Length: 453
Length: 89
Image 1 (tube, one colour):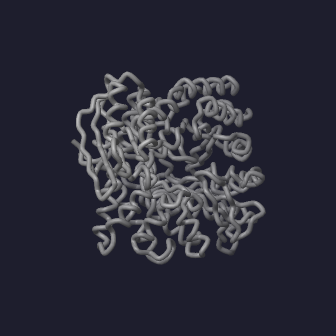
Image 2 (image 1 turned 90 degrees about the vertical axis):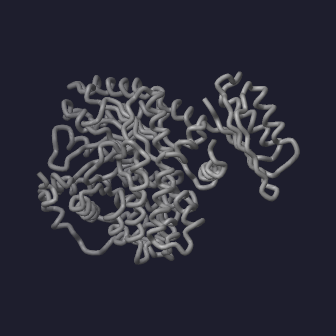
């Protein structure tokens, strides 16, 4: 029989410490939906998604009820639409976004990701038109998420795409200015994008993946913080790392169980568990508060990068043994607007965009959900993307940029999204123009790290 | 399939009886019970078999939630595997 204290611990994690499975994401390949006629292709896309994921939401809810574990989101990721659109690039590519949105609505999923292009080395047929359509697509759809991979360790950084994405991010914010610039929150620019990521807005279904697959993203910053708060006093850093590892193991085991069960019930292969600590704006479900629990007065003060590196590493070490396949982003997320502690630290001036940039060198994602002044230039956005991509390229890790230029807002104001997206204080960016550098275009050559063969 | 029922709350007369009655009415077989009272906080854990239950899992949960409301306790019904996977290697 199980021990009473173990059972009560699990229940306490769920009831009081915000433990949940953040998402069950079904990856669906659309490579069999290509057609020269875009309308026919859209019908194939809609039909395939609806056929493959018809039981996804119900299965998620059944597992949630039987196991007593909250499963917050059910999502779908698809083959990057840039590829699906290749045969019909001269037509209105945005029709694919409408088809994805319609399928998401029909199925009742929370998001559908994959309005994406992989252009780390150059633009293939369909990619350019897709990227140009992103602002309109994110404005006119509700559930569609978009991502663009502009660099990788193997390929270097496509600076033409970086330049383009500065404009696209700004346009996306402007076109949705009447809805708190929400479009930009659904758009991620990646370097080294993972092909099995279950988290939005950057999820897409890579070309090397099976036809359909189940990926699960766990959560649980509140559980880690509570463990440190309960037993962490007076412990040295090695002991703190061990405590994080043990907690991460338990969280991930739950994700593994849900993933295996969903895979079995849906008759879809199990892909990966993403070990990420994903915060929510709920008080207590914050990565920043974990860092503060380790002994930092405020997230963002000196020492934050070291604490985050320790946390990120311990989460992986604890999680990796708990799951048979680990993938996606797997680490600690630091989305500013979605994390109560980050919001507080940004408001009090302890956390700024440059400290966040250094933190991204040791965590699992990048500059995520950062609200910047509405008068930021496209070139500055491009330069922020280039900096972040350079960190990812050189360190052989995923980095991402999800900036929200808050139209009509200036530094110090607050942009409210509500729900899981939270609210974001507008952060000032560094002065000085990178215009000439960005307008050069071309490619940053792949670093020596790429030459491993 | 086995499930774990946990009852947590202030100790009052008849909690065990009421939960057991709800189980019996639903054809749920109680395999094992442990309970502890710490000061006046009551924690009871039941391992039950629900394969032969005459009602669905959600209905069982609803019925037990009603017992929880009557006795001012919090009652969870969860699949046994969630605890096994989290606490056993």
